[in-house]
Length: 405
Image (cartoon, rainbow, N blue to C red; front, side, top):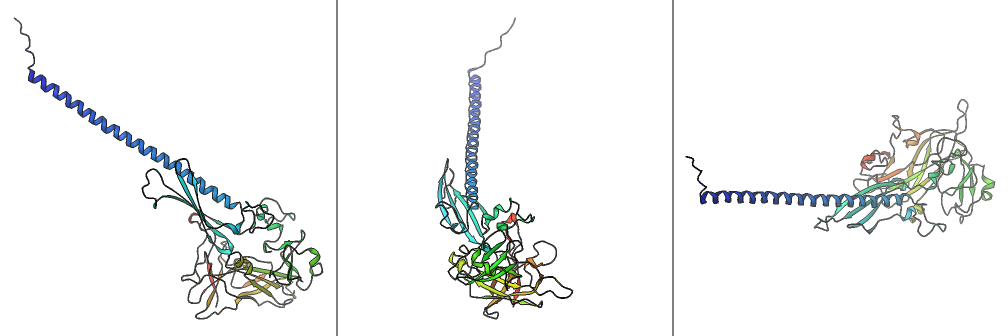
């Protein structure tokens, strides 16, 4: 005799069906959390993708603006330039909006003065993304660069070999100490008026940078209007054999003084050369003028010194001069000013050479430029400045040394 198993009771069947329902609900709950997580990940991925795209567009806008500024065609505007041409003097602060694919970008340009007439330009791009809730705290990307106040014509000298086959690239194929405003009358001679409305013109040899003549010209004449005929009678006269020393004088009268961006109003001053080499063919002549700089908003005094070479002597036939360049016309006492010179061991050879603006020039036998000064308050020390650091955005050496008193 066999016995069949008894069927499950109705109560037991109900318990089994309830457990299955709970399992299904838990599975649905887990699936729901998973779907929410996937949706969140998708939202984050979408936002990250949008932000990366927006940052790329912002970077492109900033870089494009910086490249546009690097392409200025001249230092100042003249009649030959098209209305749309960009010139250095017109690079100023500005703000404008640019529509993008998913947002609108605000581009701003901030311009500040730097030593030697250069300008520091900061281009910032700000924008709001889809998660931005505060318009006063947008996303921001910023780039910075230094624009030297150098005529774009100099760029050609980096590529074209000079006619004289000298290995050093020379602005306008002439000695780098010759002022940029000087006019080349031919391949060998340039003329320069140290005072724009003055009656004195200096004639330079383009190759050596040596002054070969001092001329008297009309006060109404300009660098651009002078011709070879105007100076033909004085191309070689009493000024022959002189060297040029030139630079800028800036003022920083705050506390502490700032050697990187000095831009306080200039004061009347002079420059003198104190020679300690003998015997010289004539006396040094210096001119200090700020009129052309101030007219374009640059607070700087340009100075130019013509220094005759010493006469050759027995046992020393070399032409040179030795001595010191000092500022005059300033009170160098309490309540007045202190004079600093921009100077450092730029080439790292362990000494301050003549080209690096020493306290005293020794046997200088060439013309020099960029011999710059900084004037600070008498109760302030000359700023230590900072060496070039490209990673930190420092493009010029701003170190100074005490000079007077």
